[in-house]
Amino acid sequence: MLVYGGNQRKEGTACVSCVKLRSKPCCSFILVFHYSLRDEEEKKKPHSDGTDEKDNGNQTKAVSRIGNSNNPFLDIPHDPNAAVYKTGFLARKIHADMDGKKTPWGKRSWKTFYAVLKGTVLYLQKDEYKPEKALSEEDLKNAVSVHHALASKATDYEKKPNVLKLKTADWRVLLFQAQSQEEMQTWINKINCVAAVFSAPAFPAAIGSQKKFSRPPLPATTTKLSQDEQLKSHEAKLKQISTELAEHRSYPPDKKLKGKEVDDYKLKDHYLEFEKNRYEIYVGLLKEGVKELLSGGENDASGLKKSHSSTSLNQESPVSAKVKRNVSERKDYRPETPSIKQKVT
Image (cartoon, rainbow, N blue to C red; front, side, top):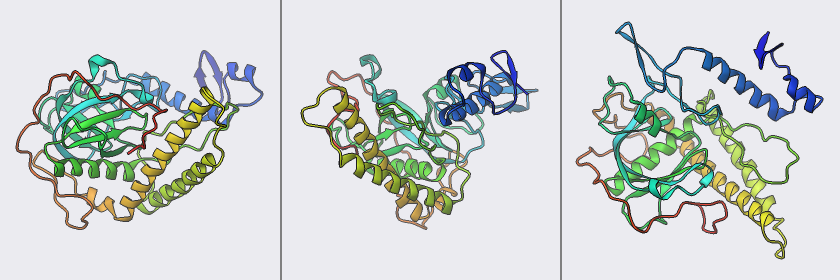
């Protein structure tokens, strides 16, 4: 029996309020309800506020997820024992907030961090990485999950050199400046490899009556599939997205129409185009056997263990100098919006 909202009921049954609204729960309800229950159970367990607590002076209790949101899809899975795939200095600029919304003017300045790609999380720390040092609350706040993310060269940003663009699963967009073009490409490859190998398969499309397009959420959990199964999953998703994009473009809106219907068409087209590009890159990387390359990740701050099994990933160069901190610019780079006309990179 489960207690939820003050009522006792059997596991898997709908809540009282849901029964009043419909005769039986829909697929979307079951999915969200499952994660809501899990989130409630995690909240009842003793945990820290995003930081590690020392237990008896010897062991540490680490939080399982990073984030203050009640939405389980938005919290970042935190594994203190995850492998470290890359470290180095990066300057970060917040390009767009969740769902591509325009970032407030005062939050767009460049800031320099020591970046650590650990598991499926990119940690942005003020100090250099030390395995024995616990993450601060600020470090956890700045952390970015790379599950279902896509990194690419920011070809449409010309104010600074060696800038890469990272688009996350919740469609936040961040710009990162590396110390060199080679370092930039290495970060791009490493982030995309981690995303391709460890991102769990997307949820089945929910059935709804709304005509307005809504971008489906993506799971933040790590995949349980083998590398071959992961490749087949990505290939199937790529085929599905490609078919949907072709069908979508075969029925464009009437040229006389304006407003929400046109914006909705552009939003869905923008989403499908990006997803197609993302899965194409994932499939290409998995076919090159990136799982073996990533298994040689670094476990300390001395640097990545080099692997010569593939030429797809550039070998990492040692960190020689910090990225120069920059003051806020008078003219700034405008974040992406769903209705933009330029092609997503």
